[in-house]
Length: 293
Image (tube, rainbow, N blue to C red; front, side, top):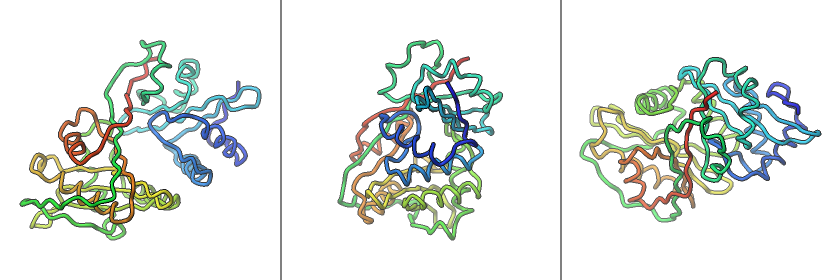
């Protein structure tokens, strides 16, 4: 068995990795593109990002597995993604060589749960629901007495958008505070894969931003994503979230989006209630576990 780490990956291996991933069922916390050019761009982004480490496992000159590791050092945790969960235990030293003293977490989809043979190795944390909506007709507008909803050009509001994002999600499990450079880079990387970003904000009459939503539209398949939506803690439960979500979804639909995806914490009952009322249906779920070693 041979493991090749991110910094040593060459272009022929990226092509080989694509062929390996293309045959795999959906798994883990991250979905890779089935389009070869976009896949190569995604891998290139990971190679350049120091937060990530990709290790490829070979047997007889053939890829048999991989480990994708993301360090979130400010949270003192690292996230592990792999196709073969049974290989984690034997490769824990390789993983810890990159993650150091961080605690290890992993996201496991429904379809992967039959791989969990040694349950003592995984300690359950929480569940996220994957939901989708197929719709080509805009929702009726909902007015709010407390706020005004407005689309903003992110190029003019980078700093404000990073600030409101961090304010809205500071108390959410697993959220790592964003910074201006990473925020810009994420948008730029999405655009390289022909994915446009849209931002809606909620503000009061004093022009104070109360919440925001980030939606993304894939220009090649017309699929959209409600990537993030949040309201500052002090303004929650005041009827701001639903009209903000509707305004964001309408913008996607107006831009010929045919299918919209989102992820939501299973413990976030208010958000789940809103999404269900708008017609979103759960199609999968992701369980998060601590890896004990």
